[in-house]
Image 1 (cartoon, rainbow, N blue to C red):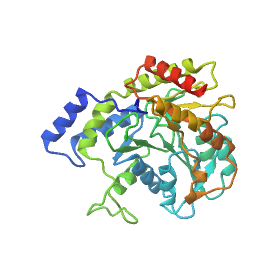
Image 2: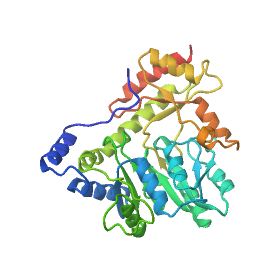
Image 3: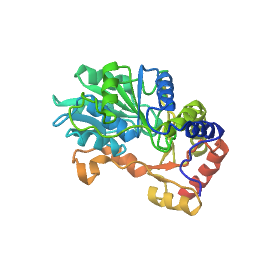
Image 4: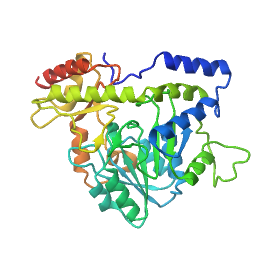
Length: 359
């Protein structure tokens, strides 16, 4: 079975991890933690990077550090990973869903504008599948209403927006290292150029005898030196991973041209990192999306549906119409996108994909 994704690891990861183990410093605050934070901040072009134990932890701490609490509203795309929603609700705040841009996976700035109220405190923009949202429009809109902007860049570290690195486009950004473009097993990062916000995140990251700035319970969200050692090697190869994934996406796009299947084209000024390459069926595709996934599995190719809209989740059902998210969720599938694959591999997979779609 060709998997959806596999991390790219090699001798450099073995070298840094072995060095970490031999040093005897396996836990938090080791030298690899500090080095990974330095490298991540430099890569993103921000002043501060605070390492954490996961992308979910990054979201939780970003929301809390911004002072978002009970009764506050946070606008978030309905088509996203569930951690975005729980990071809001676990603080007593209310997720307010916004639809996608028609035919695209990023949050629609017009939909955001329609959902802002006096209770809105932040907009959480998700770079789904590694493709940047329209950040200039979102940031300008949010700041005009006195709202913060959070980038969920978990799937997009290495992408660029108008030649600026993803992770530097908002008040604060959140990364995940759980088999994303960087893979450390588990891990994440909070990025910001706001010194006060970075300090607040760091204070909330772990309990401490002198942690007096915490207004309520502080839990453990620390990144180990072991994971950071792998992360240092991973960030060194990040550009190569992004280049490989972009080449796969281009090969899928070319190989599916003229069929009833298509990828999502890039727009001027946005350079996707394409953590996964989503493919869309059309009304002319002879089989359903789910039947297509089953046929690929029969041929030894892993695939799965794209994210399910959160407005349909039993815990946060919203009867507001979100036609574009529902449409993408019904038609979209993820196909193998590992940086271990070559463009020729992608073309062969696309050939099987076209045959499976045609019956």
